[in-house]
Image (cartoon, rainbow, N blue to C red):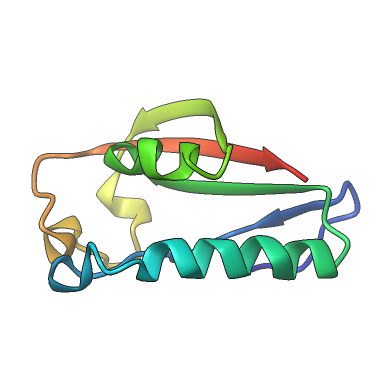
Amino acid sequence: MSDVAQDGTIELTNVFTLSEARGKGLGRQVVEEAIEVAKEKGAKRIIIDNYSYLEDFYKKFNFKKIDEFEFDPKFSEGFDPRILGRESDHNIVLMELNL
């Protein structure tokens, strides 16, 4: 999680679980804790960019999609989406949660 920007925005980054760990509530716990930490830091808004297949997951926490774009591997810093078992999903969604 980044520091709070002057406009009150904080970015949630690098949140994922490996395929074998899914379905155990770990992602939910991490996001709930991140929301609480953001509030404690005085954030007014959280933004996250992630693969589009996670859009419904974040909607459970009231995140709203504000943009979508095609995945570009040259900006992935060596991250390979196949590590998450998602070889064909190459769209990224930008989502926000107003606190």
